[in-house]
Length: 362
View 1 (tube, rainbow, N blue to C red):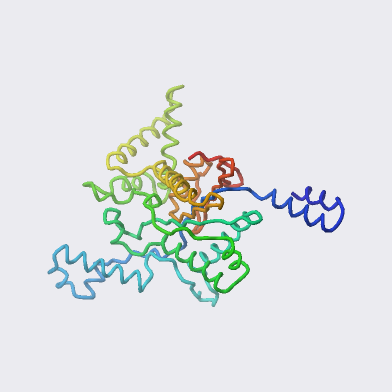
View 2 (cartoon, rainbow, N blue to C red):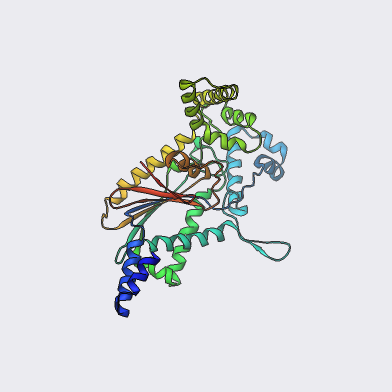
């Protein structure tokens, strides 16, 4: 772009220089008709309080033993709600003053900063006179909640809280009439806000519809030490395909044979209990993209559409690796990190990851 602007400067009058330079900048902007933002939630309070023990301390151990299961669960649910509201369990963290007097930014502050930066990027992508509509969608997953109970029995919802902080930040900018706020008010319209099951946490931890709900996660953790099981989880599908192809073309070596058997054992457990694979996660995220684009874009085709989806790290990673086909090995999305997928007016769908552009097929 620098060379094109220099050509414009050599072309004559100040007015022409300004016009030509602005035209070059407009053309060089990445044109998109629809944008998907697949974002991990902000930093949150990941404490795991022993609710039953807290309940015993509150009303007495003997009193707790007198309760039937339904009464006990009701009181535990009330206590979880209290811990969410009063202690922020499962919600974005606040700033913390460290021993040396410096302030450690919490999830709320980091999300506020991200929201302003991301909105500025969206506005930067609009051409002269263009406006955009935004739909906010977030995961329904609560911290240590149960999918079977529609996530009502957990602690806070970090994706929902992230979305709220984003919206509150944008509202504050508009109310304060900052430069960003004025632009938002002029060019942006919020179409809708809501949770979507497609963005939920990976369904691998506790499948309460079966006899052994933790069979798959236990098998993963027993097979691989530390947190390395996450990497194996993401790579299983691609490794299985690769090894089967090698097996078809030539004989596997001993190491490859052991790896193939290992994967087959884990896959058998996963399929038996109905746990999700990383490909399953990517597929549901991509399915939501298609549904959202069709549902909202048709309402106002002359406006650009942004679908801002707040989800979990495993959803972002799974989509990057299996939806985009990116080289995402050892990729752990940071809090508030996002992948931006742009659909150009001609329908071409692209994104950038680790400095490389990828075409996406939904």
